[in-house]
Length: 117
Image (cartoon, rainbow, N blue to C red; front, side, top):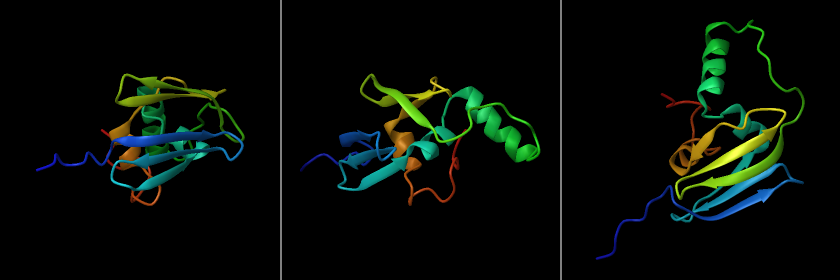
């Protein structure tokens, strides 16, 4: 009997800077494509989570941050479980676990940021 497939395990990761897209092929065979703006908006670091909560509490709050399209400066592996996206002019502290990326995959998540602690 074979072991169950960990759906949130990537078998292929592709950064396409000209298309401004990050793509993942999962062990389950599913494929996900994330726009850079989408990923940056859902940064899981503590500061970005707080900013999203503040926007929910007060939609008129003035928040600092980069304007214009999000540019990816670099992406690095964090152990064997996550990626760290470094956004030019934005945040570079978010650790995007593969479980989190699987959960927020466009088309899968009912609404961005749902299920955040």
